[in-house]
Image (cartoon, rainbow, N blue to C red; front, side, top):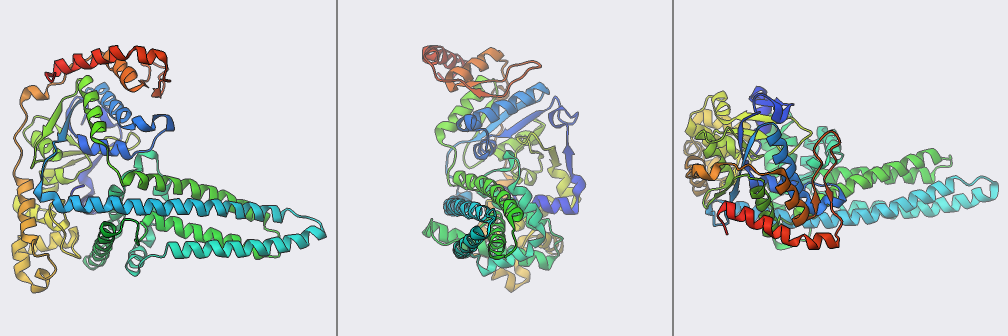
Length: 533
C-alpha cells in the first residue's frame, strides 16, 4: 500500500500539499483531464466494499461501471493499468506479510463469530432483565429477586468469557494506551459508511494513520513504531504457523470488546440493584443492538480479508472495461501497475494517477486519492511538490521514503517519517546513517542493504511506456454496455434521465436464457474490436 505513514506525516507538516476537491470530477482541476487508474487496487477496494445484499456478488462490476460512467460524464478519460502475474523478487517479503495478514484476518473473523454468539446470549439476558423489572405485585417482586439473582450469575459468566477471549498482550496495551485519545475516531470507523469497510490489510494501514495523527515527537514516534513493529512481527509469525491460534485484537475489535464489557457490567449492576431500573435496561438493549450491528460490519470486513478477488472475477472486470471502450494496459514483471501509471503521468501521457498507493509519490507523479469514494472529496497530491517541500534531492527523497518503510524494504525498528527525515537531513543517505552509529546497524536485518538497493531500483527504473494505440479509448453505444451487463451478468443499469434508478439485478427467467446467444454476439464483437479473437 505504499510508503508507511507518509500521508499522515505530510498532513501534519505540510497540509497545503494535499488539495481537497469537493466537486470531484467536475472540478476545473480534473474535468476534461485523463487518469491512469491502478486497476488491481481499485478492484480490491470494490471487492472489500460492502453493499446492498442484492448486488453483493456483483459489487466489483457495479463499482467499476459507476466510476467510469461518472468520470466520463465530466469529460475525464479513464485508462486502467493492471499487473501481469510474474515473479517480483523485490516484493517477496511483502507477499509473505500479506499472506500472514489474510490468515490473521481469518482468526479475527472467527473471533467476531464468537462475539456474535455472545451478543445473542447478551440480548437474551437483557430481555430477561426487562421482563423481571416489569413485575409489580409483592408475590411477583419475590420472584423478581430470585430471577435477578439468576441473571446476575449468567451475566458474570458472559463477562468472564469476554475477558478471557479478548485479553490483549502487554505490548498491545502499550499501543492502546498511546492511542487512547483516538477512541472517538475508532467508534466513528465502526459506524463508517460502506465505502470505508475495506480489507484488513488496508485497515492496518489506516490504524497506523490514526496513530500518526497524534502530536508525535521523535521519542513518541520511536515508542509507537517499535510497538507496532513488534506487534506485527509476533502476529505475522503466529498467523503463518497457526492460522487460528493466539493473536491480539485489532484496535477496532478492542474498542468493541471494551464497550461489550462495559455494557455487561452495567447490566449486572442493574440486575443486582433493589431499584427498578427498567428504563436503563431498555437503554442497554438499544446499545446492545447498536453494538451488534457495528460488530457485524467488522466481522464482514475480516470475512473478506482472508480472500482476494479470483482470477475470473478480475477477468470479468477487464472484459467489462473493454466493452465500455476503456483501455486496459498491462504492466509486466518486474514492474507494477502504479509504476507504469506513474511513468505514463511523468511522460505526459496522462494527467494523473488514480490510486490509494503512495508509491506514486515516490515516483514524483501527481496522485489522485479517494476516486472510488463518492462521498469524499478527491485529493490531489503532487509528488514533486512533496519532495520540494522537504528540500531534498532526488536521492535523499528516495532514501527518506525507504527509511519510512516500503513494500520493497522493511523499516528500521523505531523509525518513522519524523526520524527518517531528521537522519536524511543530517547524514544524507542510508549508508551514511548506518555508518554513523553501531547501535543503528544492529537494528537492521542482514539483508537490509539488498532491500534498500531493490527499493531504489523500483523507484528509479521506470517501465517502458505502452504504444499510443493501446491508450486510445473507443466510443461505445450505451445500449451495447447496457445489454452486456443485463444479459451477461444480470445487472440492470440505472435509467438515464431525471428519474434515475439504482443498479438492480434482473430476475432469472426463461428470457435471460433465450438471450444467451445475444450475449455471446456482444462478446465476440468486442473481442474482435480488441483484436483478441
